[in-house]
Length: 289
Image (cartoon, rainbow, N blue to C red; front, side):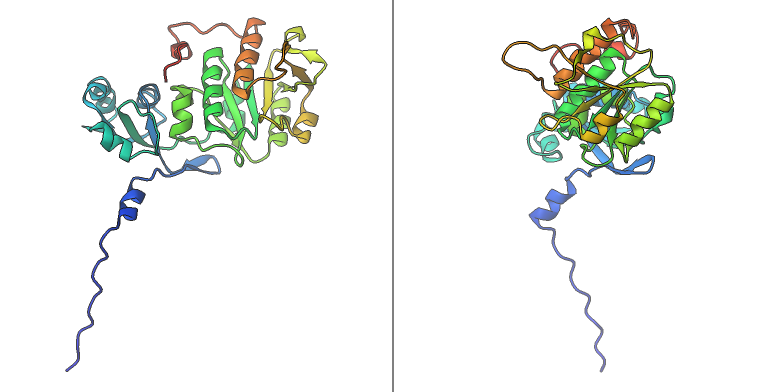
């Protein structure tokens, strides 16, 4: 008598399987779109995502108090919302994530085209291999506060636009365009063709930013801490400028340098100060995120 083949029993899920089920997916840039699911957390970041029509939310979990505030925004977008305990939210996020009782699983934002993002802009930033997500988030926050239309980064050697960046940006990731380019030197040439004068922030430059006659359309390039701007980036810039620092420290953290530079450019009448009634004016000036 022929025996029927015995199907293997399904393997019981291990503790590792359960951990993987809660591991956030890293966003991956592909052409002009980004594939992947991101986990956003923090009140400002999640509130901004829920009010951004370009962001597709999948589900929201929050503690009771946070859910009372955010449920109407989620329901208006057709996003499922459920109450959860803080420990359950922590288990679904990377270790150490300061989630403030809020977790939104969402689709990654589509990557904007550089020319479209900068067509009407007067001020944009370029980041030359700035890899720290907290620095990038802080730069996005300053860009939103001072009216920069875009923060341009490279596809490689840049952090994923995930929950860490979004939390540090305190909602600004949903407001400022972030084109991802394969080659920063080529992006500089494209900006110059659009009428931008490209300034490179360099500590040893002869001219300081306050001394500069600010161009009508300005792109400011900032390098990573330590190496600064790469040689090819420096060579493509129209001119190099520095911040006039004094005292024992000759340089600033890149996010602080971005904030000071953006303030100086806006003080030089390049930009009008954001009104409290405009979306950019809603970026909190406090330290909470």
